[in-house]
Length: 397
Image (cartoon, rainbow, N blue to C red; front, side, top):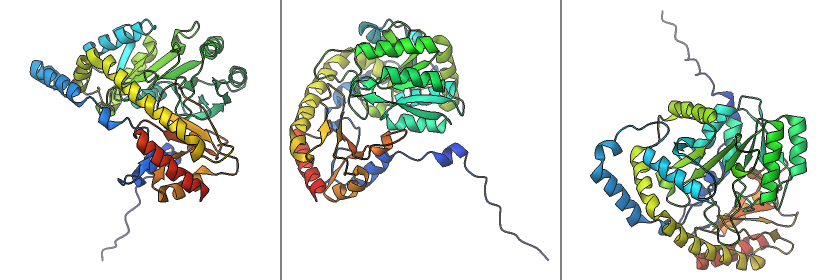
């Protein structure tokens, strides 16, 4: 007689996979993909502005001139041509940089994940802005970090509050998006960056400075990277991306870090994907020669779209709402009267064929449920005006 039994269940997922959820932004995009939707929720560059011909020409040249190299494995650190061109670009913007200071990554999101692997042990404390870039909260959550928000105002982190948190909590690192921050669009002034650098030097803190939007400035003066201030030189990791200025589909980012940490990130990258795609790197290196001209065109169009959204907000949002005027980037942050819950109201907005991102997911703690993020770069001024009309109707419904 044969006795059969039910198969045993497979082992459970890792604890970190069970406790960290997916991106609410990605989930919103999934339900708002229908063509009639005006979507202010995504952080997507305007596809009609991609330099299709210029990028295609760069790929053709690479594949015609050096196909064996372009289609072969590459070094983990990145193709020398791209690292050299990128180092020259960073140096020209005020931060002395050599090619060997850089690691090319598969998007700057990977750079953040590599840093978490290299720096963060389960239980380590990580400080973030409030509100904070959503995917950074996911990365640090998956690493098992204890994530604490630093109180912020319209100019970014409060230096006094930062000093007190460092004293009490002994964090491993501080993560910042100081220029055209996601989600708020705010920019941290030079004096604040200098104070952050001083605090990091005094207390032995890593600074992770994420700068995916810095070249998208529409007015005002450029603020130097935190990495350039005294005290931050040996403890700041600068992250950058070609996604917002070239094309996100290339999945090209980079990190600039002190040597020991950069080597640790390279080892983590070897375990993740060996190297960033060679052909994409070589094409991007060639395209660097014309990138400034392309970025200038993008800035002109995006600036007009920002102005169109700012012009329409007074009629779109309820009386008592507040928002700032970002000098660049892709996002505008609004706070509605306290009685409004933007998470609860999103379904009604979607029913009116317009979407935004509620502010709640961007907070590491104590979310402000009356806030929302609007992306202004993907739609034309005419579409922005219509989208804001729909938003007003949904909020007043």
